[in-house]
Amino acid sequence: RYEDASYQSSDNADTQRTTGNIALIRRPSPSVAWSINASTSHVEYDTSGDTDYNNQEIFVRLETTGAHQTLTADLGAGFLDGDEQEDQGMVMRINWMRNLSPSWRTELGAISEFRNADDQFVSGVAGGSELGGTQDVLLSGQAMRNDSAVLGLHFTRPRTTFRLLGDIGKETYPDVDGLDRDRWSLGVEASRLLTARLRATIEARHENRTNDNSANDDKTDTLGLRLDWRLGRALFLGIEGRHEDRSGETGFGYTETIYGASITYRPNSGQEL
Image (cartoon, rainbow, N blue to C red; front, top):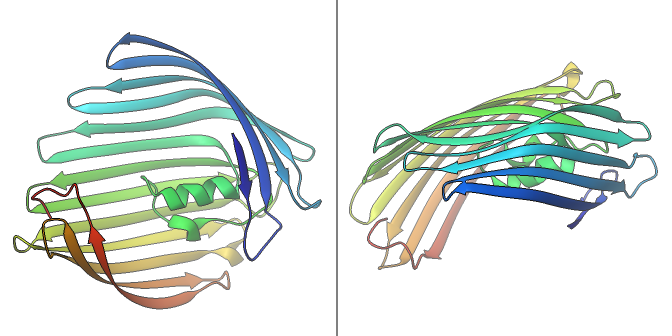
């Protein structure tokens, strides 16, 4: 795999990365797989002021899929090797989903691995379990250790859905002072089918970031409302509004209110909104 990361307003974190992976996989049953995995990455920065480094991992992975739960778990060791950065530690990645009842489902995630700003940005864009999005990225030309955990609760009924998600994390930069950061966030989303063609969704979340250098502490509060109206079998009109307030001591504070409208075509929506 080859990756090229280029930042529009800053070039001190632009990188090229090459990665190789190998895995030996054993499937003792259709629903279970064990594997031994090894990977190596070389990260090269465009600017001479940032240090290139290598990141190696070796870990065992377990994957299971059942009627009531799914689990993917990695456990092993990671090694960071650069001219100015050297470290090693545990690699752990856990993603567990469990059905508590026909309506309730819980989600648990845990990560311990080496990352850099590119990895954080991609994780924010992809969404998944972690809150924060791309604004939670600390732009730096240094690799760091990311330790985080996520706990979620989901409720699903034909007319109503509810989601509660919280995460907590710590970013540690080996051999670099002043960049370590603790963060946590809590978000809630509720959706209700008001009529056969109209669904309303409301969401709220709070994110808090605390740096070793307290001058960089900040937080973000977000509140949003969305209406989805079915115009036809697969055509939808969406109207939404979102208010976001970022405050703190970083110099990147802002307050914005966004309104939007969209027309979407969903051919696989069936009879559900």
